[in-house]
Length: 208
Length: 184
Image 1 (cartoon, rainbow over the protein chains, first blue to last red):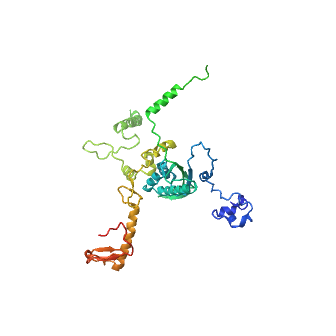
Image 2: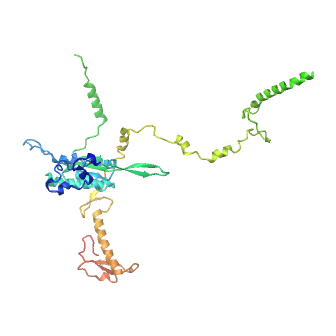
Image 3: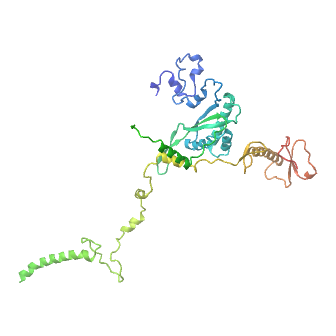
């Protein structure tokens, strides 16, 4: 592997957690070490970067822009599909209601998501100028696939299968303010109205 | 005449053989002409003329149909389930987690609790105190199977045994009485 990793990069990839360029004073030995200081797999997450955007100051007449807090946790030892059910449960709830539901849920991911929400709430109050910690609601909650490890699962009669050790990421976006009212379910009457509207908006093309 | 008679015999034999060849399949339809019919002892009662093949069937019945034969009759999926079909099944409302509507606030500590369950925080508090009381009891008894046959009373700092506590075992705890442990 070493021959195509250039310069000091091979030393970094051997021990991804150790940062030799930090130990040495001001990159004396590895002059180009400060350019990319991550291993190939540790991509800088886009979700973490979303907290860094700064909007221009609002004009006096504009309505107040609600605070948005993005938080995530990476490489949770849980399945992405099982975590999705919990993410779907708390989508659109206020943070207090979400914490209550997660506290009495028996799934393993519920404990993890509760920790993430509490961390995000604390971050909001400390760093993002949120006045009341209860005045937050969950705008988005997503799951993503982490790095899978492949292992052999031994069956009888010398058969084997290849099993995946699943890990997942969890992303949450908290927005200040009360949760939006749930939209009413689409009735048959609404569908009929839309259909009639579609029929009425038909025109003849390529004619006078 | 003798010469004519001698030349007719082989022809007669051939004719007889041919007639027997034609008759045989009609007499015993279970056997083609080549095989010999089992002219064994016949039953007096009407019974099927064909005897079972000796030894051949029993061998077949002893062996169970092997795995490679029975896979032809096993259920197997015909087509791959598309992701749309899979999503419809996985995201059906009966598979989503239902919202719990039986969560309240504990009046003692203010934590959340389910309506039909004891408050978790208060329970751990009481459990910790009970464990310390039991340690004291263990120290007093000194070993297993030494439980006295009298009642036990737990007294905290600054409390004296009253008249009602005559003859009871007294456990001292070196702390203030907790608010939830009501004294008799």
